[in-house]
Amino acid sequence: MRLLILLVLILAGVAAFGFYRGWFHLTSDGTPDKSNVTLTVDKDKIQQDKNAAREKTHDLSRPAAKTATPTGSTGQP
Image (tube, rainbow, N blue to C red):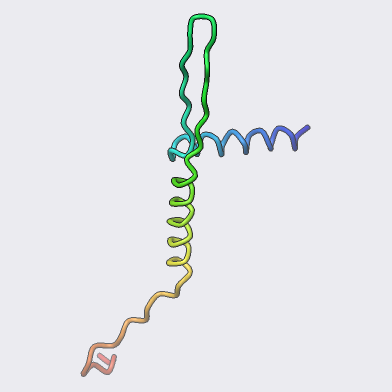
């Protein structure tokens, strides 16, 4: 039962994050007797965000460049 609750919470979190990032859009229209709800998934936006996240993690994984000692300085006071 706890696993099911955890899965539902994860799914709700992903859906909320997806709506926030613009991955999903809901539209509705209809007549007085019927209503139509459409869920649109923007695969291009998901791919752009995926590539941007990959770039950021790649940049974070690079070691920081070592700072060079100024020329003429021996590092001694």
